[in-house]
Amino acid sequence: MENALISTKNLTKIFHLSTGPLGRKKVFVHAVENVNIDIASRETLALVGESGCGKTTLGRLILRLIEPTKGEVLFKGENIFSLDRERMRSLRRDMQIIFQDPYASLDPRMRILDILAEPLKTHNKDMSKREIVERVKELLSVVGLQEFVMSGFPHQFSGGQRQRIGIARALALNPEFIVCDEAVSALDVSIRAQILNLLMDLKERFNLTLLFITHDLSVVSFISDRIGVMYLGKCVEIGPTADIFDHPLHPYTLFLLSAVPIPDPHARDRAKLILEGDIPSPVNVPSGCRFHTRCPYLRDVCVSEEPQMQYIGNRGFACHFPLY
Amino acid sequence: MEKEKSLAHETLFEDVIRAFKENKTALFGLIVVVILVVLAIFAPYVTPYDPYEIDLNNRFLKPSLNHWFGTDMFGRDLFTRVIYGARISLAIGLIPSLIAVSIGAVLGVISGYVGGRLGYWVMRMADVVMAFPSLLLAIVVMYTLGATLFNLFIALSVVGWAGAARVVRSQTLSIREKEFIEAAKAIGVKDFKIMAKHVFPNCLPSLMVLFTMSIPDAILSEASLSFLGVGAQPPTPSWGLLVSNGKEFLFSAPWVAILPGLAILITVLAFNFIGDGLRDAIDPYLKG
Image (tube, rainbow over all chains, first blue to last red; front, top):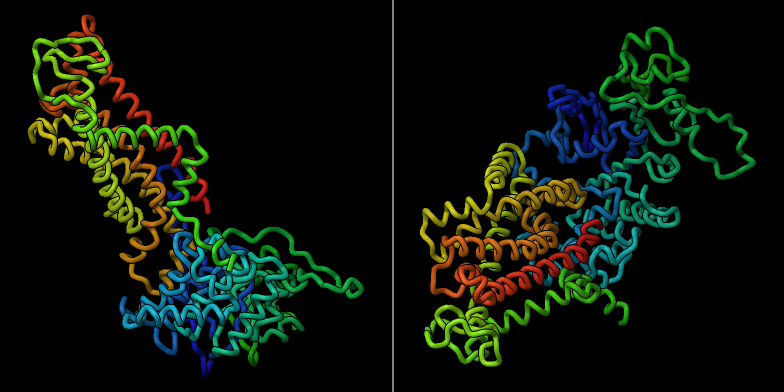
């Protein structure tokens, strides 16, 4: 992609686990394998897939919170894994993360003021105490919280309020890119809508680029420009949201979309497709196409040969027999 | 601004207050300790006698209004010696525990957070210390360094850090996986700061419990060492030494050994009560 803010090149993460008696047996978990994704500046890319498909690992890799087994992440054309410690630290201003669990993502022993001041103190050593307090007040108002919140501790606030604090922390350094890792999944439905609206507002206001990791497709259609579908550590389909919702190309995407609940009871004439079986273990990855163990359109070539990502216009898919 | 007030905070300090409010045995322990501390500090004003003055005309007096705990084999007032002994026992309880818990906390946090080879060897060292019978190890230290009070501090600190390190390490291992640590990393906070500002404060409640719990251990160790003759030396009025001196007259003048023994018992019990109360009050906090 021409104007990609972030692109991954053959990004792969394989975790090593020791099992068996005395930990002698080594097991390899293929969490993310050969993922190539571009995220354009100011777009929202939603990453969807079942639990355990590696979407969270991918988000962590893109922020270099974990080191990859191989591959690159280019941020504005520069491979972040080749940066030394200090340059990586200063790059962190530009890339932030919002977590899933608002109860675990804030240090229970710190006041909100200190939580929000931490990024400021880390990167702007010359900021005075008053400037920091002013900035924290500003951040709180940006995410729709009142000033008195500053003096409280995390456990005094509700899940929605905490998530707003988490968002404020991510915004503190004016980043260009934010990974939202299941950022609304742990919230009540009513709160979820508020937080989503807030995120969309902030995205417009601060020209943010978002990677929105979620398993909830009803959220995706609301916020994202493009969707990337992941299955067992691979990106199997990627493309504009509306196109993918209209006619998915990969059978897995079709099943995922079919599982989205329809609010209008009269519109429920659509045949519901249910996917059989569980997602295979990322330890023993199926041969050929990783989806072949569950795919209803299975043919011989699917078992023997792994489909490569192909692109038609702005859509990409990895399937031998796409659903045209 | 009623709301602002209610947000004031619920801190570690408030947890401590709650521990004593809700737990009567802990409150009892606290009262005993406070009385002991007051007696120890104001010992010269509490009793008219000198703890070292020998009065051979008044040997082995039974407890009476003049001599509350009676007198010992040199005619010294036993109550006076017990409350002067409280100074030593409290110092022995507090200072080595503080040193041991501090060393254990630093090593535990580093070992748990950094992990790898360093963490491994710190814990193996702790295992070695724990594998030794602690009293024996303390005796060895006292024997090589000489039997003085200062060396007693060192001996008890050397013995005590391992347990603290192990507890703090396991706490650190679980805190390390929390998302707020990942958030700090994503911000670019340096590892040392993460340990000092996030990991350590979250270990603090357990450290406090650990500290209070190790005080009675230290007091008992001092008493045992002094009883065995490698701790405080006569005529220092250490509790262990008082019991040790009294044991020869256990049948003719039982109070000389029993009353200092009771002092040890009550003090240790009081600190244990406080420790239990703190643990009960603080533990639920650790969940969230």
